[in-house]
Image (cartoon, rainbow, N blue to C red; front, side, top):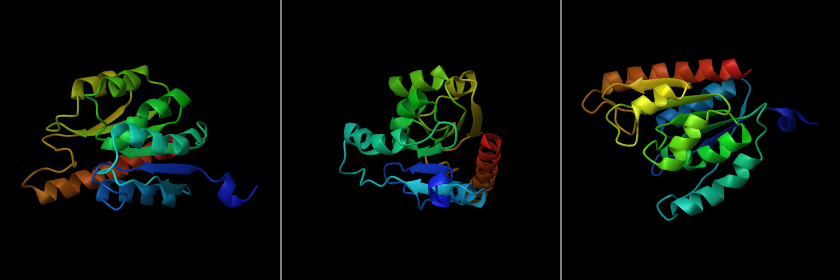
Length: 176
């Protein structure tokens, strides 16, 4: 087996308008690469796809992951594939998962496979209580919005990004 075939995969699932080039996903991918993981991504023009089309588009990539070696790193819309990852036992880093949706809530509480849940307390799609009750690792930005930023506080937002990258690194090291 070649080195590429045997390497661990970190699959990036972007959000709607939040691509793999945006800070949280970009640096999560960089950390994964530094730790020897291959960072792959699913790309979609989420403005043109329904939620069902996003799931159908990403499902093949998630189903190809190996639960004992790989990880999903998904942002917002990408969390629509959280139930698929949980059903397969694939660990995940979920940035602003859509916890206001019943199917996402149920999968988070199902708790199969390790997960890091990241959200902002001012994000309407985040449910701090549910995240903390799930038994997963939780990293929360108090006052943070859906983009994991503090409105009007660029320095505070940058500090959170640093802590997020450190948390992602710790989570991925723990999977090794």
